Image 1: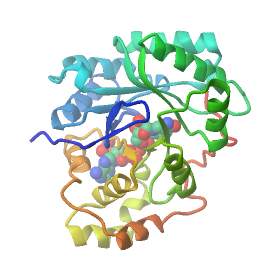
Image 2 (image 1 turned 90 degrees about the vertical axis):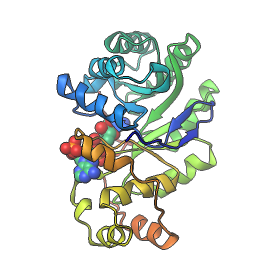
Image 3 (image 1 turned 180 degrees about the horizontal axis):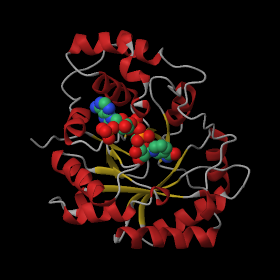
Image 4 (image 1 turned 180 degrees about the vertical axis):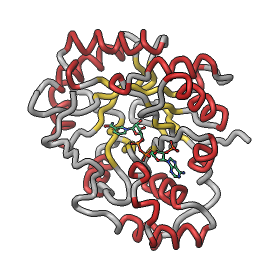
Length: 280
Ligand SMILES: NC(=O)c1ccc[n+]([C@@H]2O[C@H](COP(=O)([O-])OP(=O)(O)OC[C@H]3O[C@@H](n4cnc5c(N)ncnc54)[C@H](OP(=O)(O)O)[C@@H]3O)[C@@H](O)[C@H]2O)c1
């Protein structure tokens, strides 16, 4: 029953599955069981964050699963309140202790918090932690092109990926094009728009019926064909399996355009514009 998920290669050579498991709100023993079930089904990428307070849950699932650690890709993220260089280094170490892991495959800066203006020193801490072997690949979340340009200009190091809000109601066409031109992989957070009314959309339902798939599967296939890694969160083994069963059909250009056409200027789930929003 285990499924194989295709992989893509980041600009630093690390390979990543094109779908992973989001873990926001997966905590404690129920969370451990959900993550073990996802790994049993075929998930090899698990997305966590210091601020989700579940790095321990993820680490426990990794140790209890039957899949060797080196076959998994584990991500965590640096919170805004610890962007100062010394605090960032300590936080990366604390992230590892919480998970009881020797290394993270991917570590991301969670938000740029531009008013705070400390994301470049946070980035230097990630660069150094990679040199020390604590992290294999470093990237960012919610960074606008201007923030990434500054990282590269001041440190010479470009992120391997940028994890951004991306779903049919917010298709991020401009940001995605910029990533593509700059060899940065797009990773989609809330790829199912947190199961909001997108899952009742008539256009998506028609496309889903055409392929005898669910709306969630059509949306996740759309992410894959856009070239983005998606990290849908599900606590249920049935929906986890549904969400990775998308490699036996494809969307044609018309269907891709119809889905991308659902985007709205105000389509963000919580109006979190990285130019002004700050998260600590
Ligand atoms: N970097 C950032 O700033 C940032 C921000 C937000 C999220 N994230 C990451 O991205 C991950 C995914 O985003 P998200 O959790 O916000 O939202 P999401 O993955 O778009 O949606 C999750 C919701 O969809 C439901 N669901 C999942 N599969 C389904 C299916 N096949 N049919 C119907 N409902 C389904 C889940 O319920 P059940 O669990 O009951 O299945 C859950 O309520 C997070 O978990 C987190 O790891 C990162």
